[in-house]
Amino acid sequence: MKVRCSSESIEWLMQAIRRLPSDEPVPPGTHGYNEYTTQKEHWLGWLDPTAGRGTYPRQIGSNRDARDVYNHVVEPKLLAWLIGSAGVSTELVQAALREAESKTKLPSKSAAIRRHVPWEVVAAALKTRMSDSAA
Image 1 (cartoon, rainbow, N blue to C red):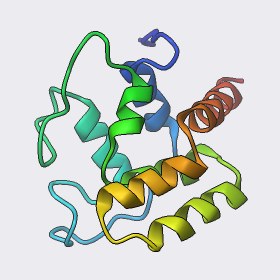
Image 2: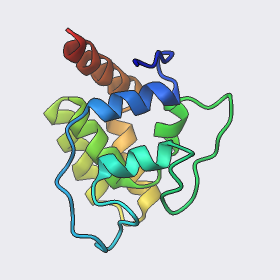
Image 3: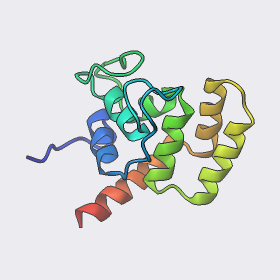
């Protein structure tokens, strides 16, 4: 059964992430990872309120959408994996990661990534990948 999701809803984002290739798993217990071994698994566990995984539960509200999620993520590894896997241009991804590496705190690293790759760019890349995989 195919779930119909409104464009840019959290459900849409989960569906888009499910279609992306996974990153290489790290060994269980790797520093900075909780109950997951890939950033794809991290995204899906955190976005799904029934998964019961991650450091803290995602806030749920009817007025929250994928843009809100992207703009509030504090873990740069999540953002780096998403922009790379979604098909954002290599130049933008590299610029974002270079600036993020120059920062010391997680919120600053994540903000640096978003400065180079705003939500609109990620959403467009995800929509392109979804339409390409549907064809």
